[in-house]
Amino acid sequence: MTRHSRDTPQFYLTAPSPCPYLAGKEERKVFTHLVGERASELNDLLTHGGFRRSQSIAYRPACETCRACVSVRVVVEDFRPSRSMRRVLDYAMMVEDSHVDTRIVEYRSQDAAARASGRGAGPLLGVALTDLLSDGLSMVYSFFEPDAHGRSVGTFIILDHIARARRLGLSYVYLGYWVKGSKKMDYKGRFLPQERLLPDGWTRFEA
Image (cartoon, rainbow, N blue to C red; front, side, top):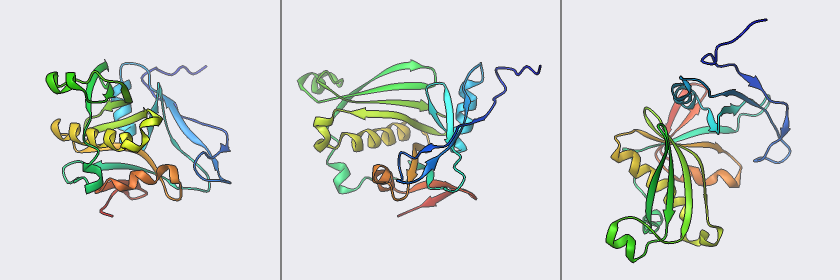
């Protein structure tokens, strides 16, 4: 019986299942486990190749007849928020470290304590789980209070990550997959310029 090292990634293919983004389509994923001492290094390498992380799993679409899922990353140095985006920059936040390469960012409403100390103590509005890569921040997962939807918390979370990446001297913010024709994924196309991972490699898009 062949035995594999925990530091040697083994890749697996899922069975077909209904696509969550496009009606009438099926999806398949190729995935591997992020384990061992090289887990952070492997996560960094795979993210550059279009994989996403979910807990200790790294995955990417491997659909047989569809290539709609496209990895996107915002070009931090050249990004400029639109007028509508600038209107949402009114929140305070605090950061709690989780692991060496992962951050949990909490977003709270601004109150008198935040203005005095610079740290938010108001109601929790949103949370982001973010990986720190060699060239950027990878937004693994985020969610926010649905009653605060009109305040554009989701937009602010991305803008804040762009600002954080710029302060850290990092080049990109990885947003995951953009899917043409999926209303759930349309918002990612607003953050320009961005690069999309196409068959020929990462390609810059201005609009």
